[in-house]
Amino acid sequence: MGDGQWAFSDRTARPTIDDVAHATAIHGLVRWRPFRIDSVNQNRCSLTLLLHPSPEYPFLSEINVTYHLGRLGLTVTTTVTNRDDVPIPSAWLPSLPRGHDTNDRRGRVGDPGQGVRRAERSPTTDR
Image: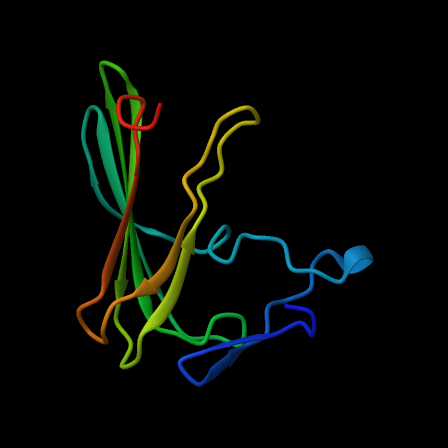
């Protein structure tokens, strides 16, 4: 992203340069966005965000994050659904404390209106 922008599906994204010293954008497109609480119970909660197109990410998508605390620890399942009329790019990098590994789930989210991408972190499946 040498010139501060990138293109996908004939659309150009221009992320905000928030690390001015290095002229780069730091990850965190949805970090401060208001997720809707879908459900909460004793050991599970589910949150959803409808991400509308913007100059930083010009695609319509829906992000659902479910947290489940089980006997072996916390499992976080993220589902990104394409709500746009073109294929969309997706990269979901959950923030974890230093020393923990993350799955880098990059790629294209299927065909318009039906693409779904899931990423799951679990202490039992990601050792």
